[in-house]
Image 1 (cartoon, rainbow, N blue to C red):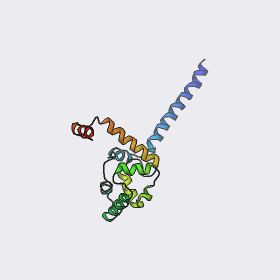
Image 2: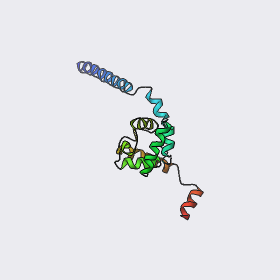
Image 3: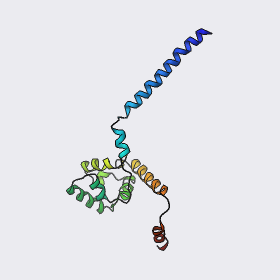
Image 4: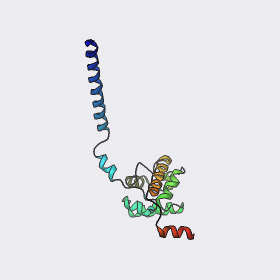
Length: 148
């Protein structure tokens, strides 16, 4: 009877040690520096213009103007239209983003939103969900919708 207990105790200690090691390993996977940055990352404003997005991302003025012109030629004027185009399969570079502008804009949008249709779709879904959680439109918005 005691021999069984003695064999179980080391196994339990090994399991506990493995669990602690796994937790420590998980803690090392996500660098501490990335945690505050993720928390500080802004949400997506679907109505934000492409020019405002580029300005917030610190894209240089000449590149911002060129990007805005290219996007407007394709009917993309705001973040919602940009994400919809990418969700539809058009790449950000095909829309007119230079590699540098793309990298800068991705810094102010969550989870590489501009890199894939799936990421754009997820960002749109999250942004629309956030809008629905915000509550019903105010009286002015409701009156406009009813009069339209």
